[in-house]
Length: 463
Image 1 (tube, rainbow, N blue to C red):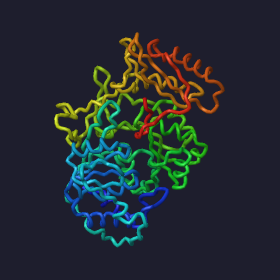
Image 2 (image 1 turned 30 degrees about the vertical axis):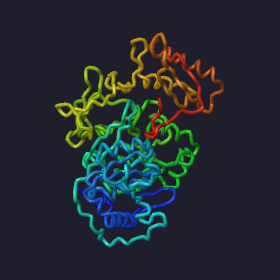
Image 3 (image 1 turned 120 degrees about the vertical axis):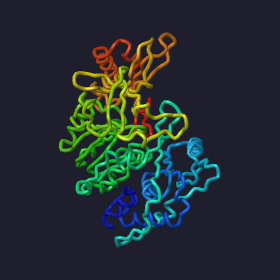
Image 4 (image 1 turned 30 degrees about the horizontal axis):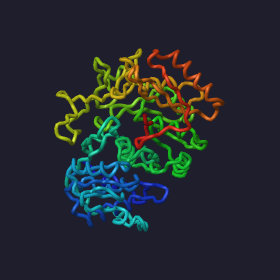
């Protein structure tokens, strides 16, 4: 199997591979980065290496350099607190840290910085593509270790091999060469890894906008890089659509993932980018990419259970829980001893609840995120989807609020769009819509109008 650097070596030395607001790296220079890393740090060969950088650009360099060279890559999210990094190191027996974050608790492990190693601070001299990329020989099948989000507890560590990560990546480089992908996700998360691999293996250019916080700055960076393919959570897309310049992008591909893609956001993207192929992708760190839906509707067709669109099988339990069975379940595993990723038949319980409606299954939310209101189960995502349809609502988060009587109440935090005149009118409209479309116990007991909503490192709204 090809390693990542082998895919780079098939490209012209002058092809742009990575671009951000400071630097661009072409194929020949990226090969030079790999050669220097492997030559000057042969100690990484066959070792377990932690990758912990503050920017996606630097992480991408390390992944290309070390895939097929290091035996194991622990990919640490840049927002991880020092104590969490120390914990990840202990759980994986990591031997070296390649990164640039200060105050990491590495337990005495030396921290290497790929920027200084490869001369990126001063810029690289462009190397002519002479067809000889030095020692790119595969010494091992590198194991990639990714952390789950940990939203419901301590993050789990999931090990993949490269073939499982590439399972649904499109490899038509004739098409890929015309695409310029924008990266909004944290590259150290599964969704970011997928965009990175699709761009690199597909022969595209990757524009790094993951480190830019301002919406307008993100959009300007994507515009300057002529971005025409973009992936993000529904929360990310809603924020981007607030920018006056966003519609100036000429998108050919728009994908959504990480959260439920409701009808409103799908329609908004279809209106804004009528020529684009719009898909929402179901994936998880544990199961990898399960399937994608491109018919413009929320949820997925019931026919997917009998005829899955990808190699991954799909089933729904009697309790409404979505299960996936990858073609080779042994390619993914939990790192921790005693934790089993699959059942005896290779099925992975995703923890997501779906409900059949006609000829489709619609996502209701996470089983672990249910709000218990006096013994009744409320899925926050279901309530959010209803409120999101109210005119004047830009974004909404629904969460539990403690109650001495019922245990919990439902609370809605609503961010208004720019054309809302009064907060009281908006709250009344929300309550009216909820009373019409929801059960009594699902209707928010508290509705607050707020100026902003928090988004986590994975691009999801924080409850």
